Image 1 (cartoon, one colour):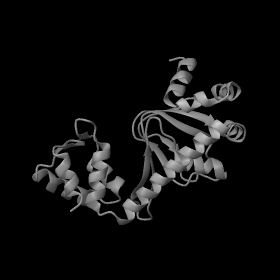
Image 2 (tube, helix red, strand yellow; image 1 turned 45 degrees about the vertical axis):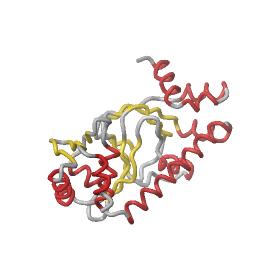
Image 3 (tube, rainbow, N blue to C red; image 1 turned 180 degrees about the vertical axis):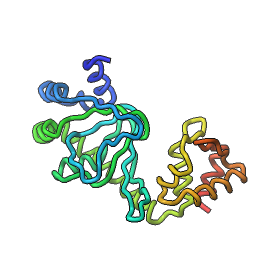
Amino acid sequence: MTDAQKVERWIDRFPLLRALSPAHLQIARGTVHFPVLDAGAIAYELDGECANYLMCLEGRTRIFRMSEGGREVLIYKVGPGGTCALTTQCLLSGGTFPAQSVAEERTELAALPVSTFQHLMGESAAFRSFVMDDYTRLMSGLFTLIDEVAFAPLKQRLVQRLLAESEPRGIAAVTHQKLADDVGSVREVVSRILAQWAEAGLIELRRGAVEIVDRASLAAAGRR
């Protein structure tokens, strides 16, 4: 794919860019680059500098913190058409990245250098509106996640992750360890709950995946 084709795909994925003035769009087109992360590659290290405003074209990254006990705590994930709220916060404040960001699968990004981001934030009302509206939406979702982690029972969190990860056919391509990381638990506990649901006919356990057999009953099980 040529650079020009990559730029057009970027604009198609983020139609807001068409609202930029011709001069501002030219600046964005001239400075954007397109890094590709293999699965497991690090996008940002904890306390690392935020050098770019990142916009996800394909793939998915997970943003998380490690507890003092070495347990991974998921904050949120960024998929196609998404941006990273903590990266935006980092760029706006001039601070460092307060978590870690890792690609869950091969991930293609559009990256605007911090100098371009700052210029467009100062000069383009359309770009500034997009960034702030998106940031507000993402932060609202982050507070919802905090409420879930702090107050929702483990089974409810586990059901929500399974439903969120599952494709239309009902298959969630996640390991027990990955689910445990996402819900802030340990693999043994998650495996025990999944085994109970499998015995009840709500799910089917596969190697590296979970198939949801009865979505409605599984959702109900998370509320009990």
